Length: 64
Image 1 (cartoon, rainbow, N blue to C red):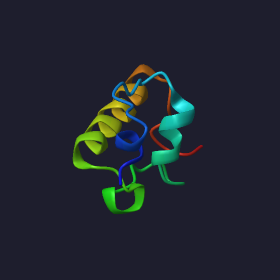
Image 2: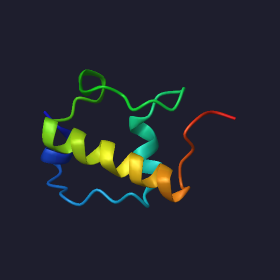
Image 3: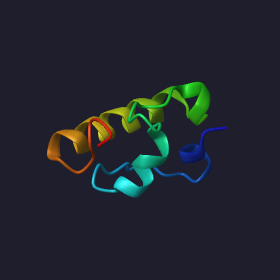
Image 4: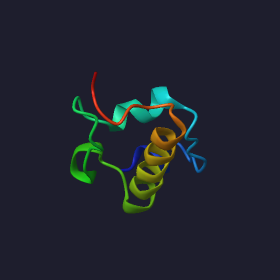
């Protein structure tokens, strides 16, 4: 079951980088659905939030 569906969380904010970093691997790649156990709806929202946070400079694209 999807974590966000269980907790009834609809708003995924790109400014919450602590929460978004759980869905990024050690090489800063977005984890696939099978590893995150999210539904397709929330996986798409997480991916767009991570991409938006990267574009705004809140999250890095690559490791240092």
